[in-house]
Length: 298
Image 1 (cartoon, rainbow, N blue to C red):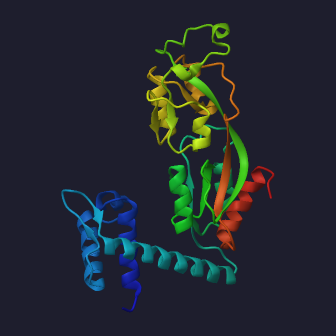
Image 2 (cartoon, rainbow, N blue to C red):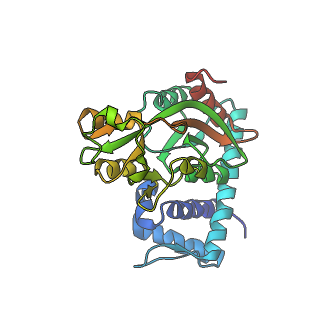
Image 3 (tube, helix red, strand yellow):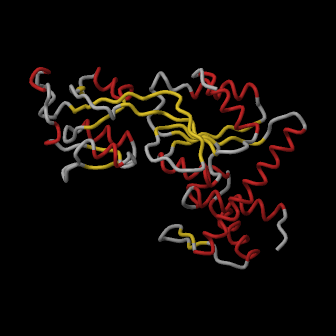
């Protein structure tokens, strides 16, 4: 079939629905009502002649053909965006958008200078729309590979090929317990050389097996995908946890967390700036330059 502006608009709507895992969540991003979004999806299905998704009380679910169309549309829209950016460069201007993804709980780190980089970027390229989302590390890497994101920032234990990684700083972690925990009121000298493996820990699931093996996992331990979830478990007093020092500091100051004496070579987490390898659009190169200059990296 011939792809016109109408089909491209419908594909954009479809991609937003898939990205937001449903029509309700896509309403804010698209600025459209749920019935209008549903009509757009139906119109796209009629034009393509395939059923793209199941929708109803059971929620939103892609069909196999819908998954294939989604993958193709992502590639098509990403290619068009790249060409639009290249044409804008020929005119001597930067337009389009840049999609940045970062891991959670970085904003309280004084070493996290993304806000400064965004300000510099917006001043240099005011016509480029900046999009920022918080994602899990593994979703950031896969999203950069498939074109959902242009740039990622975070700690990535499990590296994947095809991406360029640049360490911009290290995030320091320490071992903590919550105020209800039995260790909270123990004097430091009684904890020197303490074997903490007898206690239940809250770990981050996305950390590498090499890092996790260093902590002697047990059946009492639990796993989370976000630092805030890990923080809540540690604050409960039921678990120990390795937390970023900057994130734990307010709770330590409030008497809700205690930093425990603990030495481990795995406590430093390198924070990387990630993008795809190879030639990049000028918008991505400019953003990378803005953020790397803040860390004296080239």
